[in-house]
Length: 599
Image: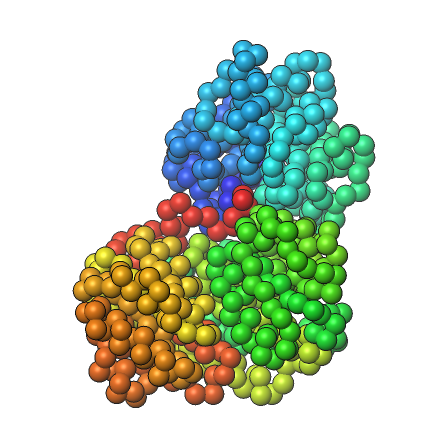
């Protein structure tokens, strides 16, 4: 969510920080700002809206500084405006924050009772005010940061630029934070995402929980401390990539459309990667497990639901699929013979990370399906299965979902002690070709989108392995088109949702060869109530063509467990073209963030 970049060194750090923030724009944000030192004084520039609004002010003022912190804010506390934008600053400190201070209300009341004045509606300013108070009581900057951080409840990361020193302090608890160091140019950086540091640093550091990072400019080094101020080795280090692959739209109108079209190529590559990378056995075996607990949020949760069907059938093992935001607050009935399988595109999803930490304490085996190496989830799990989707810029996930489900299939075979076989590769080849056939001619999907985009709402239905795709299709449409869309198991229509059916409601019915007659019966119930019906189902079927207002025929032969992915590509395209008709910001939908790093 919130993007953080901090720089201290011997060059003008302003363009470095702005470039880092620009790389993190895909996460989603509503305002941006920087704080910098000039003539030993702290200055703050911040602006509601896109980063370009801030850049215009910076360019106009011709700002240069070797000590800079920057932030792109996704609002949690306080409305979207210039005042609530980060950084927050005063004469002594500037701070940027990612996360939520859960006891902010209580701390703010105490500080106000002592005469302290607040200027924003944010919880983040509580940290600034308390930090300043502690510093003015006689503590060093380091000790003031530590004392302030220990007073906070909740998961957060902060980067602090003090007036009194030419250093930067960064500290975290269950929120993303990385630091980097340049070997040659005496430059130190901190960020919420390693992607912001590529090309600027030679070494990258991943601090552990409740760790303070001290970016010491005078000695060109980064030191780490625990919350008591003692030197700590609670971090991991790695060499940073120096080559930044800058993603472009490559002629497509939106990143989302480009990423939909990338899927056949990614499917083709993933079989080769896993055949090469997993020639050895993995340490986790299905026969040793009591239960597999698949945990994720949003689209990742839907991927988990897709995997449950194949895991229970093939592994003959109990499978629970859990929403991370709910699982972490239950008292889950799990054991050390269970597997916690965590799905996340970014590897930084706050609720998913918290569940991983909970399962670690309960001695579960931990595995992940994710896209970002070096992420927090990647470092927490015993086994990691990368989806190799490349960077996904569009906030609404498309190619990552597809690759999560496919890699989950690979994992199922590895849990059986098997490896990708020729038959499995053949199924992927069929899937790739079928998806390519859809992409080669989207005229019918475009036409349908044009005809249905003004309808009042959309109900997606599916049975068995297509039920998760109904959920995912509805989520994708509401994310980017800003319309009311809901996904249901087709058999549940009569238990309430059928009350919504009328001539202005579109029912998008996902029909597979499996349970065909049962699903058709559900569609008849919609037809009897004069609902508009769009069917995505088996080709050359006169029953489906007759009952539907719109019909998208598909070839389900030889796809086996991969047919839900095939159907979902149609859902991705339908959502995209409906959003195009409505003129929304498809790549950066309002109120959404790519990496959800708050609860």
